[in-house]
Length: 170
Image 1 (cartoon, helix red, strand yellow):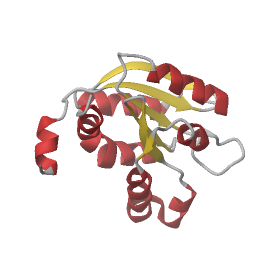
Image 2: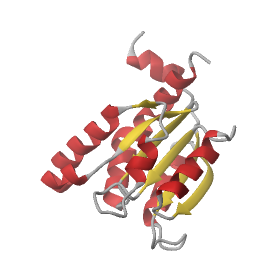
Image 3: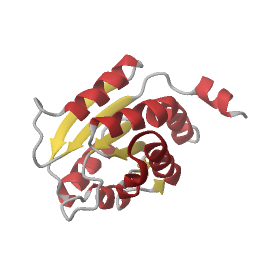
Image 4: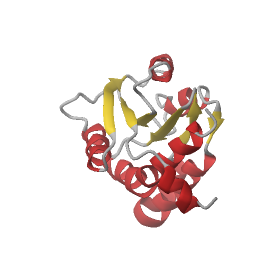
């Protein structure tokens, strides 16, 4: 079956949780979380939960576990905490929670970032995606430029397709 056929069979609406990982952002100042919501809703997806979570491994793991157990969430989209600073723990928290990794997400994100946005600074990005307990998880950097790139070029075009693949054998 072709990719186009898969996309035709994919769910049109995906129920999403947004997690902004930050020690400093608030709901009023979180432009990246707001952008994710705006882009998802513009394409007919639902945001069922939105939280700002401190950049602490245990807190990120907690919210991933909560989301994995909820029937009203299909996908979890995280932004922030993906760099290489000591406080950046999102990558490790997500990686350690995945049943299956989708390495192509991070690879394509870094390629597009290199080509279209930040050049060789793309090597500092630790974007990651995968599946946990039947939920798609996408983790991207927290800048609005990175969020826009990840959402418009990778996540939104493939979100339904990813969910189709996750759900096809269930």
